[in-house]
Length: 136
Figure (tube, rainbow, N blue to C red):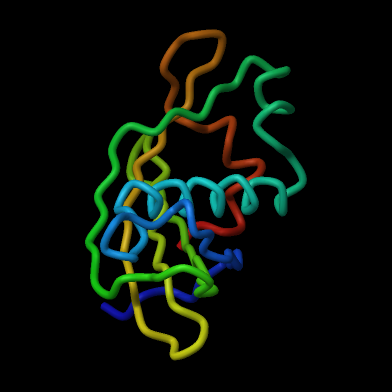
Protein backbone atom coordinates (compact mmCIF):
# COMPACT_ATOMS: atom_id res chain seq x y z
CA UNK A 1 0.00 0.00 0.00
CA UNK A 2 1.38 3.40 -0.97
CA UNK A 3 1.78 6.02 1.73
CA UNK A 4 -1.00 8.61 1.75
CA UNK A 5 -0.34 12.21 0.89
CA UNK A 6 1.17 14.28 3.65
CA UNK A 7 -1.39 16.63 5.18
CA UNK A 8 0.95 19.05 6.93
CA UNK A 9 4.58 20.11 7.02
CA UNK A 10 6.66 22.18 9.38
CA UNK A 11 10.10 23.58 8.61
CA UNK A 12 12.73 23.58 11.37
CA UNK A 13 16.29 24.89 11.58
CA UNK A 14 18.76 22.77 13.55
CA UNK A 15 20.41 24.75 16.33
CA UNK A 16 23.92 24.14 17.65
CA UNK A 17 22.77 23.16 21.14
CA UNK A 18 20.69 20.31 19.69
CA UNK A 19 23.84 18.52 18.53
CA UNK A 20 25.95 16.08 20.49
CA UNK A 21 29.74 15.76 20.66
CA UNK A 22 29.74 14.03 17.27
CA UNK A 23 28.23 17.14 15.68
CA UNK A 24 24.93 15.46 14.84
CA UNK A 25 21.47 16.10 16.21
CA UNK A 26 20.93 14.20 19.45
CA UNK A 27 18.31 11.51 18.90
CA UNK A 28 15.93 12.94 21.54
CA UNK A 29 15.59 16.15 19.54
CA UNK A 30 13.88 14.32 16.68
CA UNK A 31 11.04 13.62 19.10
CA UNK A 32 10.91 17.36 19.91
CA UNK A 33 10.77 18.17 16.19
CA UNK A 34 7.89 15.75 15.69
CA UNK A 35 6.03 17.11 18.70
CA UNK A 36 6.42 20.66 17.43
CA UNK A 37 5.07 19.59 14.02
CA UNK A 38 2.01 17.97 15.67
CA UNK A 39 1.36 21.17 17.63
CA UNK A 40 1.61 23.22 14.43
CA UNK A 41 -0.72 20.78 12.66
CA UNK A 42 -3.29 21.09 15.43
CA UNK A 43 -3.15 24.88 15.21
CA UNK A 44 -3.69 24.63 11.45
CA UNK A 45 -6.99 22.82 12.13
CA UNK A 46 -8.23 25.87 14.01
CA UNK A 47 -7.67 24.79 17.59
CA UNK A 48 -4.70 24.51 19.96
CA UNK A 49 -3.93 22.32 22.95
CA UNK A 50 -4.93 25.08 25.38
CA UNK A 51 -8.31 25.37 23.60
CA UNK A 52 -8.85 21.61 23.91
CA UNK A 53 -7.84 21.71 27.56
CA UNK A 54 -10.41 24.45 28.19
CA UNK A 55 -13.01 21.97 26.87
CA UNK A 56 -11.71 19.26 29.22
CA UNK A 57 -10.01 17.35 26.36
CA UNK A 58 -6.41 16.19 26.69
CA UNK A 59 -4.42 14.61 23.86
CA UNK A 60 -1.92 12.21 25.37
CA UNK A 61 0.97 10.47 23.61
CA UNK A 62 0.66 6.74 24.21
CA UNK A 63 3.58 5.39 22.21
CA UNK A 64 6.50 6.73 20.16
CA UNK A 65 8.56 4.81 17.61
CA UNK A 66 11.35 6.55 15.71
CA UNK A 67 13.60 5.02 13.07
CA UNK A 68 16.74 7.07 12.42
CA UNK A 69 18.12 7.10 8.88
CA UNK A 70 20.43 10.05 8.07
CA UNK A 71 21.80 12.46 10.67
CA UNK A 72 20.94 16.12 10.71
CA UNK A 73 23.71 18.58 11.62
CA UNK A 74 23.91 22.11 12.93
CA UNK A 75 22.35 24.72 10.62
CA UNK A 76 20.58 22.09 8.52
CA UNK A 77 17.00 22.94 7.67
CA UNK A 78 14.60 20.06 8.17
CA UNK A 79 11.03 19.56 7.05
CA UNK A 80 8.74 17.41 9.17
CA UNK A 81 5.82 16.04 7.16
CA UNK A 82 2.92 14.10 8.59
CA UNK A 83 -0.23 12.21 7.85
CA UNK A 84 -2.81 10.84 10.24
CA UNK A 85 -4.76 7.60 10.65
CA UNK A 86 -7.32 6.50 13.18
CA UNK A 87 -6.93 3.05 14.70
CA UNK A 88 -9.81 2.49 17.09
CA UNK A 89 -9.50 5.06 19.88
CA UNK A 90 -5.97 6.01 18.78
CA UNK A 91 -4.97 8.76 16.41
CA UNK A 92 -1.68 7.68 14.85
CA UNK A 93 0.62 10.32 13.43
CA UNK A 94 3.08 9.12 10.82
CA UNK A 95 5.87 11.68 10.66
CA UNK A 96 8.87 11.85 8.36
CA UNK A 97 11.71 14.31 8.76
CA UNK A 98 13.65 15.25 5.64
CA UNK A 99 16.77 17.35 5.20
CA UNK A 100 15.61 20.22 3.00
CA UNK A 101 18.87 20.70 1.08
CA UNK A 102 18.90 17.25 -0.51
CA UNK A 103 15.52 15.74 0.38
CA UNK A 104 17.07 12.82 2.27
CA UNK A 105 14.86 11.04 4.78
CA UNK A 106 16.46 11.56 8.21
CA UNK A 107 13.91 10.00 10.56
CA UNK A 108 10.59 8.23 10.38
CA UNK A 109 8.19 8.30 13.32
CA UNK A 110 4.95 6.65 14.37
CA UNK A 111 3.27 8.37 17.30
CA UNK A 112 0.08 7.05 18.92
CA UNK A 113 -2.13 9.56 20.68
CA UNK A 114 -5.30 9.04 22.70
CA UNK A 115 -7.80 11.47 24.18
CA UNK A 116 -9.20 11.90 27.65
CA UNK A 117 -12.16 14.04 28.60
CA UNK A 118 -12.26 15.30 32.15
CA UNK A 119 -9.61 12.71 33.04
CA UNK A 120 -11.39 9.68 31.53
CA UNK A 121 -10.18 7.76 28.48
CA UNK A 122 -12.46 8.10 25.45
CA UNK A 123 -12.85 6.58 22.00
CA UNK A 124 -11.55 9.87 20.59
CA UNK A 125 -14.77 10.87 18.85
CA UNK A 126 -14.50 14.42 20.21
CA UNK A 127 -11.38 14.93 18.06
CA UNK A 128 -13.00 13.93 14.76
CA UNK A 129 -14.46 17.44 14.57
CA UNK A 130 -10.90 18.66 14.03
CA UNK A 131 -9.15 15.64 12.49
CA UNK A 132 -11.94 14.00 10.48
CA UNK A 133 -11.12 15.50 7.10
CA UNK A 134 -7.41 14.67 7.50
CA UNK A 135 -7.77 10.97 8.26
CA UNK A 136 -6.53 8.56 5.63
